[in-house]
Structures are given as C-alpha cells and as structure tokens.
Length: 161
Image 1 (spheres, rainbow, N blue to C red):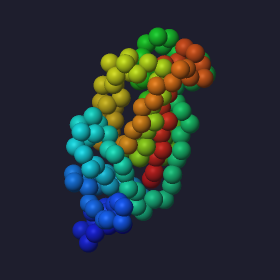
Image 2: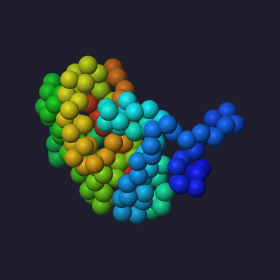
Image 3: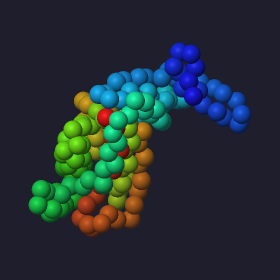
C-alpha cells in the first residue's frame, strides 16, 4: 500500500504507518525497486530492511553460489576473502546468463561456517555490492558446514528485471 506520494505504508496492528527513514527508489530495466528502511543502521551496514518491486517482468532465484571453479572443483581452501570473491563472481555469472547483474538483486542470503571470519572480510562483499549500486535485504546465517566441507561461504540471491 502507498500514500499519494508513493511512500510505502505498512499495516501494523490495524494502524498504517510510513517508515521513519525515507524510501529510496531506483529503476532497473523492467522493474522499479523501492528500498524500505524504518531504521538507518542497516543502510550504514550496506543493506536495506526490505525492497518493494513494482513493474516486475522476470524473477531469477539463484542457487547458492560458492567458490567452485568452472569445472566444479572447490577453490581457495581456508581463504575466506578469496572464496567470497569467487562466490560473487559465480553469482554474477548466473545473473549474467539471465541478462541481469548484481544491480538486479532484491535479496541476498549469506551462509558461512565462520561468521567472525566472514565479518573480517565483509568489505569484499560490501564493496562489490556498492560498486553495483545495490544494497539488497540480506540475511547472514552461521551454519555448521556447507555441502563441501572445504567451503566457507555460500551466496544465494533473488533478482528481478
């Protein structure tokens, strides 16, 4: 639901309210994304609390992308920064195959076997997303292991165009 200026209005316990922090809108071919941030802190960390997508024509649900080579072999054993960079490369490859880019992401789930180590290298992820001009709603989850034991991080994205 939106007000006459296009601001997203939430229904909370029968009351309608606008988020306290402004809506950020950006157009991506075929769709408009409007960021919803009731608090400023998440923007400072490089992600939005929500994204409203209108005019959507296509949705891509990406499988989790890890540090796998083109021939399906795990790479960079024990190197979180390198695994994160290759996982992003692989996510971009899937997006590119569908005619999309990181700029089309509307959701990103990050799975890691070592949350503290991931935070130490979070700049790798934040800078790539920043270069693409995107701050998708993101959930980071610590897991006991990924499908292949030597892998440290997996990125799962949803994109619209």
